[in-house]
Image 1 (cartoon, rainbow, N blue to C red):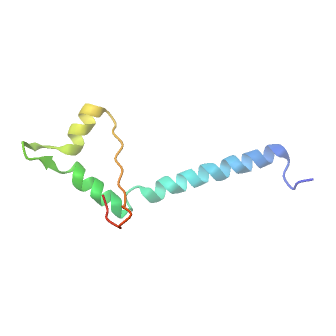
Image 2 (image 1 turned 30 degrees about the horizontal axis):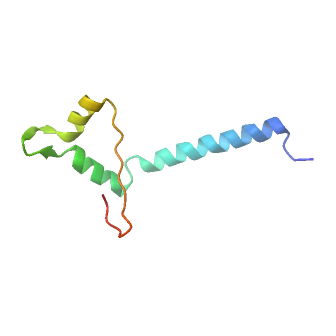
Image 3 (image 1 turned 60 degrees about the vertical axis):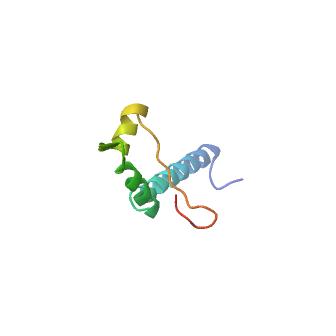
Amino acid sequence: MSIFPKKKKWRFLLGAIIIAVIAIFATSNGSSPLNKNIQIVQNGYLEAIPNQKIGPAFKEFFGEPKWTSFTSTDNKEG
């Protein structure tokens, strides 16, 4: 027989998953050096439209676009 009854196991597992997801989001918002790259692009502009930043333009056109950044296999950020 297990230490936790079945219902408590599921509650414990669900609680652990929720805490893990919250921790992932908490550490990825604002503290990542890759976010700096996203902000550079969002605050940038196209030469043809210098008065319009890319971030707000994409948000207006796409609604809520998801921005991601990555490090390539040769350690270059993109």
